[in-house]
Amino acid sequence: MVQSVLERIPSADVKVYVVWEPIRPWDLEGAAKKSQALVSDKRSTHFWARGLSLAERFQKPIGLRTEPAWDVYLLYSSGVAWLDASPPAPSDFMHQLSGRLPDDKLLDGERLIRQVTGLVTHARETTTRPAPDTLRTRSSG
Image (cartoon, rainbow, N blue to C red; front, side, top):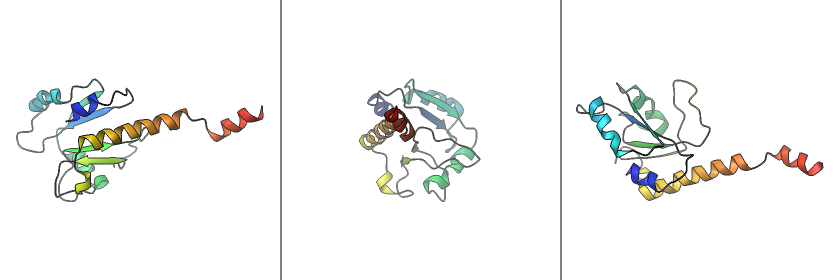
């Protein structure tokens, strides 16, 4: 699904980080490498996490209490930085963990496209709009 969503969002401003983790016993690095073909978009970068520490760090930001964050799609606005051990809360997210996170956040491709497109549009609008001081300077001289 992620690949088909990316095909419908042509913006070069979109960056995708796919993290493969050993959630289930058969989730091995070799299998993760083969699965990279599922998201082959040139804007994607794949990572293999040897343990669950990253998945566990994302529990709190999305409201998971009893298991690591996996099968989740985290959306971040442009300019968000991870500054300490705790990851920043995503601007929004979707998941495939029915019953463990809110149903209104279940993965929906069309909604994901709208959300990503909205974040890209917002980032472009805020970076191309002159700051208020710039407007005053231009109008005074």
